[in-house]
Image (cartoon, rainbow, N blue to C red; front, side):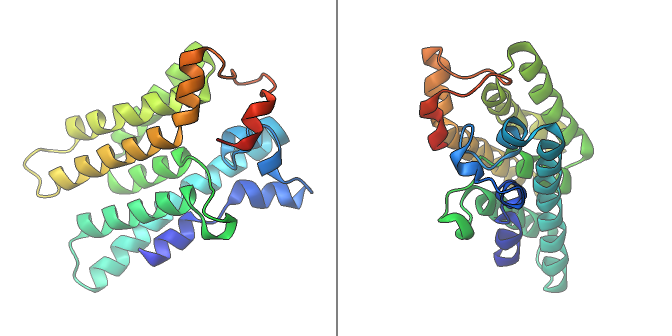
Length: 208
C-alpha cells in the first residue's frame, strides 16, 4: 500500500507544467489533472499527463499483486488495496500538501489492472459519450464513476470469491470521485460550470 501510494502520488501534471515554468495550480481550474493540463499547456501535454496518470494506476496494481503474491496474500485483496492506495495517492499527494487531482485517469488505470478489459472500456465509453454530448469533463467523469460499479457487477462473475470486494471497491471509488467533484456538482446544478474549451471563470482557479 505504501509503494502504491507513492506511485500514485507522483503529480505528473504539476511536474510537466513546472518543466515549462508554469505552476498549474495557479492556472485554469487549478487542478493538476489531464483536463486542466490540456487547457493550460495544450493537447500534447494533456495526453502525456493522462497517459502517465493512467499508467501509474496500472503499475500500482500489478506491483501490489506481485508483492502480495510473494507474501501469499489473496491476489484480489492485494490488487484492491494497491488500487485504493494509488488513487488516494493521486488525490492526496504528500508532495503537494495532500492537494492533488480528482483521480479519474489513475482510476481508469487501476480498473484496467484489476478487472477484465471490458470494464475499463465501458468506463471509457461512458466518459467519452457524456463528454461529447455536453463538453463537461466533470459531468463525464461523474457519469463514468457512477457506471463503474454497474459495469463491474455485470462483468465479474457473481460466484467469484472476490466479487463483493471488487464491486465494493468500485462503489468506494465512485463515492470518492463524486466527493472530489462536489464543487463541480454545485456549479453544474447552478448552470455555471465551464464547458471544455472555454476559459475558466476566475473563481474556478482555486481548484475546488
